[in-house]
Amino acid sequence: MFLVKFFNFIKGYLLISVDGYFLERFINICIKRGIFIWDIHKISNTNMRVKMSVKAFRQIRPIAFRTKSRVRIHTRRGVPFIIHKYRKRRGLLIGLCVFILMMWYFSSFVTGIEITGTEIVEVEVIREHLAEYGVEIGRRVSRIDEHFVRNRMMTAIPEISWIVINIQGSKIYVNVQERNIIPERIPEDVPCNIIATRGGIIEVMNIRNGLSMVNVGDAVNEGDLLVSGVIDSETAGARFVHSFGEVFARTWYEATAEYELNFEERVDTGRDINKRSIRFMNFQINLYIRRRIPYTVYERTRTVSARQVPFLPPLYILTNNFREQTIVQRTRTIDDILILADSELRTQLNEQLPPDAEVTEANMTHEFVSPNLVRVTMVYTVREDIARQVLFDVEATELPPLRPTDAGF
Amino acid sequence: MPSKNRNRNRNRNPSPDNAMPQQPSGIKVKIAEALDVSKDIVLNLPRIVLIGTGELTIENYEGILEYSENLISIGANGMKIKIVGKKLEIRTITAEMLFITGFVQNVGLSM
Figure (cartoon, rainbow over the protein chains, first blue to last red):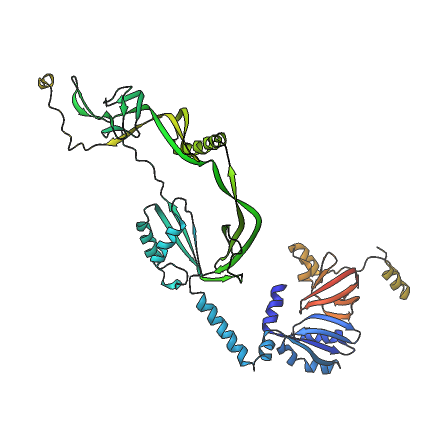
């Protein structure tokens, strides 16, 4: 029904007022003659309003004469009449053309780039690289060669395994697939050595293959050879092996921090002001008049929020929040410092530890650097596997000469 | 089924039998029944479709006899279809089909 109405509106139609005593007859004759009328609305006994096309209206005069009714146009509706109404208004027509041209022109520029799928690689890095290859806000969309950009991006950023560049109107959607960087595993048939990842004292050695170069109780440095992949035995002779096994060692981790007994602390007074700006594409509009910040001591927090409007580049709202602060002189005892240092240094150390490490001991010491300054040191004693397989150059390694027993072959 | 309408008719010109109105008969009916095709096409009988109380479509009509907001009378192959309601309006009208909207209260048929 809507479609029919819409079609009629496009074609244009007339609302006709018919006055007469034989309105039913009028309708019947119209139908018999194939004149299409619709929405017949009876207003009174002698008056009705019908809708019909302009073409139908030209054929209606004889029917009106036959039924002795008076016909006149009540309203003209539809697109042709609207155009007719504005036909003399040149400015409107020019404005419409200019508007369409401007829409077409401005939609041919890149107005937004949306990057998804990033985890390791920074979005900004991708944005910079894209700009290098011509994908940037304000550039012509038609100049972008998707294949070229894709290939260049994949070679430029090694962390990317796949990149998709979709151009939708004036917006560009970039989907990035990152490479999973798996630690290199040495295949079991490739000879290798085992070295220490960290210095420490060896506690347990479970060597399943290879020649141990150190013993339990030995102190090793980072990078020392623990297990050699070159074995020379009396029965089998000298050969290269793929050494593997576990070497548990006692290692140490240390963290230090300095604390003052009398210190200054910045405390919020509760007063703050916001200075907001709007950024749209490359234009920034400040929503404040006075640039000056009325506080002498303050802390600034910046927040950026994006408003996404369909088909348009994002609208960024930048908020600078200034909180007034006062400086308060505070004093604390050595016990307070130690409690604080304990939790702070522990979190700091836990971040450094490898995932499978086991903390066996934690020691905290402190010393006064000056009467007001305390240096606190926390030392973790850790048991961890320090073995790491490394390849060695098989070609350059010379096997020891055969033993006399082997020479008998 | 007795209705006011029929009682009034009987009073005006009393007829001897109060049987059902005569059904169309003849060879056409028999053919239509034998071939199992709908009779509205073969016998040119009106087809009246009423959806709820708001939309009424009549196919195979002949002409409009009376038209006002509360009553529409339609002639169709010797029959008279009388539609009583409120705010009745003819939405679409073509040579074969008639589409009425409004609040339909009563659809009466008489020969």
